[in-house]
Image (cartoon, rainbow, N blue to C red; front, side, top):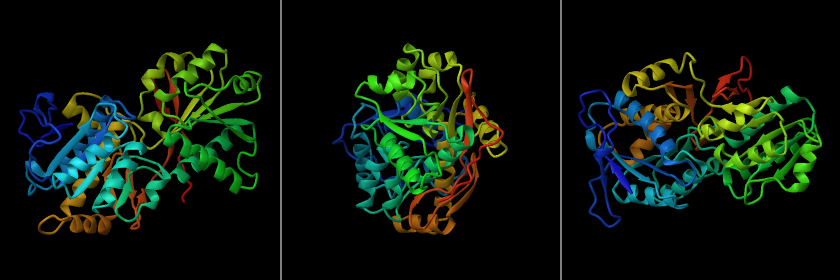
Amino acid sequence: MKYRGVFQKRASLVVYVFTSIVALQVDAAPLGAPIIGYGSSDAVLPAKNQELFYMGFELALRSTLDKRYGHDVLGISQVSDGSQLGAVRAAKELVARGAKFLVGFPTSHEALLASEVTSKVPMLFIASGAGHEKLGKMGNYVFSTGESMDYSVGTTMDFISSKFKNQKGLVVSNPRAIFSLNQAETARRIKEKSDGKLLPNLEFADVDAQSRLSEDVIKRVKNGNFKYLFLTMYADESAHLLQQLEDRGIDLPIVSNTSWTTGDVMFLLRMLTKRKSETFSAALWVEGSPESAPMENLVKQTYGRKATAEIAYGFDLGVIVAKTMNGVKGQSSAEKIQKSFLEQRCFTGLSSGKLCFHPEGGHADRKIYFVKFQKDHFIPLKTGAGGRRE
């Protein structure tokens, strides 16, 4: 486990220095009681991607939080040992240190584990972009800046319908990954509820333990039974499947999910650049948009680099956390923090525009855009902002 101090004085506005990390043993004495606890683990997303989320979060928190809060307002626990239960360890350590408000945990895997911990306290929990549908059913202490699964998958299916009409397509999922499985189950449910009106020719298939399609399914794909693939896995989890398609000479249009704009797409760059068919993805943030420009400029001035989707998601979470804390009257408590959050509910000044939350908990109301892969990155389509709402 690693804890980082924040708001330390620097010659420049923000300089992220790894030498400021203080390593602790699990049974070491506590470092004090932070008000905000930021946690993550590398069970799904690599530590380098988790770091981008945190960079955006710290930048927004530093630039937005009231001066009345001191340097010890934030405690961090990042577990980077590949453990599947790393998020549980991170959440429990932050709670044990006295944090009154937990945030971070960007993937559905992390968010579900950490929110189970915070729900027992209880305290306000806000995940950064996680989409699993269960997060919308855990009560008025659990939130995510991500879109709901029904909204995300439904909007993507609407996009597919506009692009491919009623042509036959294949939803590919990994039954061993909760985010992927949840998308496939949601797509199946939405299709059935439409009574044949939405993508009536959509079929479903799982990848095996090596993340490849079975020989029977790959033969059907090779023989032209499907006109497009809808992939529900994370980008880096799709590498073996894309290699399988390339090895078999299969080049079909691909529609992916919002995680492809935050995952390790560079891991797929070699295969994506050789494809002649288009690769589309849903997205929650569009680089260069009017809403995103102030954040992108601040990232450039501070870190000397371009913003990424991960940085944008972290930045939005940081603004929401800072404005929630700024609204707390008097001494901070878990109850006052939740009250401040629910009284505001809608937050502006974000890289993705305005985000609103429901008082009963769950996912944010927000736009979904669609982007297309070109050369080494995704570019926004002129049309394709999602209009569906739950």
